[in-house]
Length: 142
Image (tube, rainbow, N blue to C red):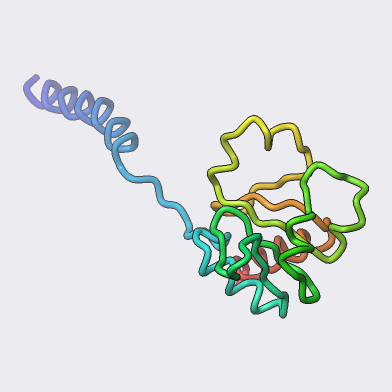
């Protein structure tokens, strides 16, 4: 009878502790290939041969929003780019990359064309956005 009690005790321990271990154990996640910081965004832009622009007149990169473009773009042109203009041809060949702080604002939620991309959200030329996403997928598959 003591072996029965020992077996029952062992089964109870397994039933109680295995779920606890599964909850406590860190979940294994594969490393993200989507950009987590500005350096990674810039590396992807460089890999694609795209230009990087900013709203700042001094030319310093603003971490809140950068513009990726297929051709060089001036600060003046960048300052005229506004999100929310679905049919605006000024976005052709250009993508805005907004940092994650924009995700939690009501302003962003009303624009259906903004897409999450790592720690960023992107808006602009749909073809270029697809290229960004495919580039990330290629890296993930490698």
